[in-house]
Image 1 (spheres, one colour):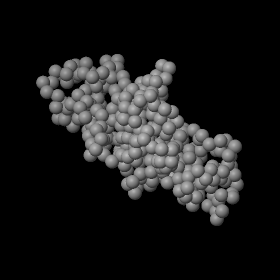
Image 2 (cartoon, helix red, strand yellow):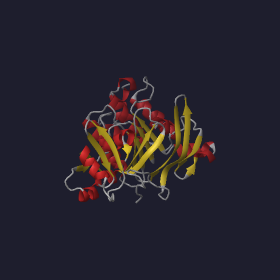
Image 3 (cartoon, rainbow, N blue to C red):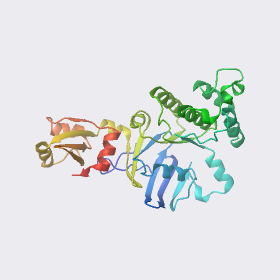
Image 4 (spheres, rainbow, N blue to C red):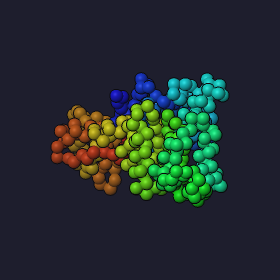
Length: 322
């Protein structure tokens, strides 16, 4: 399995992995913002979490992948095919294998649940209406009924759906269309914990055969810790790091050190615990450690707790290399 490279977090080299999505050198400039040379892959059968502050570039990346905006430079490859080299028919065929789920339901508000399903049935020849009904019943969108598409719930308008129901409708449609790759932009934002876990369970089931992939952005990093195989972070249009989630959980650590303790760590002749990032806060320094187990062996009197994705994000943006 690919590993993080040289820095305390690093950038994964996934070039040898079979990928459903691969982007190389993506660039896009707006007034006051630029996406700069972003490259990454989504290995087949995996979940890649995309994190970053608001305005970091996450949505720009996703919109470009979906073809909603043109990049100034770079290349997008879906299922091994470069999009720039495809004719219209081939491009439609490739894009029909990609499902999109957003935190905001983008279907016209005056459409009913049944009409949204019909729209997908007409647009996607592979749309599985029975699977849609099964998913919609399971998620509470439609009742368990011999003819759920004729029910009162099926006539409910999109504008009258809650945020959670709107997200579930998108997810049911994407899965019923037979998507091989799900692109999800903040899909669990604003959902209560029970609904969030229900959605995550459905995504896990979708992944079980091993031939599907997910790219998901989220501010709820606990979701990614329980779902994602890899996490990558963008900030100010640049890719800061990409890493296996398991490496953060199993190897990386966060130590809270007083000035004298920090000085002792920095005076160490040899740093067997790898590079460090530090964030100084009112007399205490938060120290992101690449290998907390090695750090513990070298400094057994200092507490170094397991790091999480939030810790890494904060230290990468606000901390400094020491």
